[in-house]
Length: 266
Image (cartoon, rainbow, N blue to C red; front, side, top):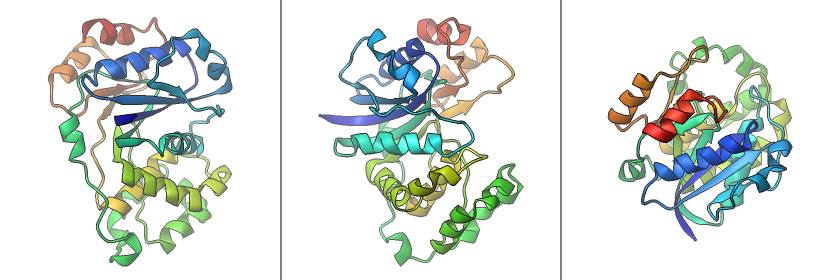
């Protein structure tokens, strides 16, 4: 089976919302062949028989507990990629379970994302310093510096540190394969050392820029934790520019007003 897009999602709360997000992805990827892969915790995994079975809805067979500020979300997405690695597909997208689409995906736009650089990273001139612009001011910087194994790894390979949310990030299959290979070789065995920060938001963008020369667009708009997304904001996004077309921090409840509005009105 060939797919245009693979969606990789971590989830831990509601099996109903898991299936609702699957339906949301299919609705807003009209005409595209998509495979949706969830990496859930043991509790949700035990409930997967409560939702309809779909050929393009998968659950990673090894459920795990995950912690927000750690390497566990990074590892889950790497494991999801490893699960689909042998399949034929174009793009791999990372999401969280409190994300939802509000407008159709522009596949042609996504296919224009930056490919791998022609020269291998170790064969071309690297200037890690160029990626450090104002990164030292970020809240996680002191935590990053405490993880000496990763600091040394990045310095040895001249990988600049970048930080960007992972939700709504699309990677070409060959780029994600190289990211995964690098992590399997250098990071997965040290995953227990990664704490205090969401390492998926450092490792993914840092390696993305290292391998492609630039950071790709993130198609997810993050709304504040302390308030609900308004209907006016959802309509504005649905009718506005093509990026972003995903919202984050939709309550993981089928009673959520935001979720119900997206499902019934967009």
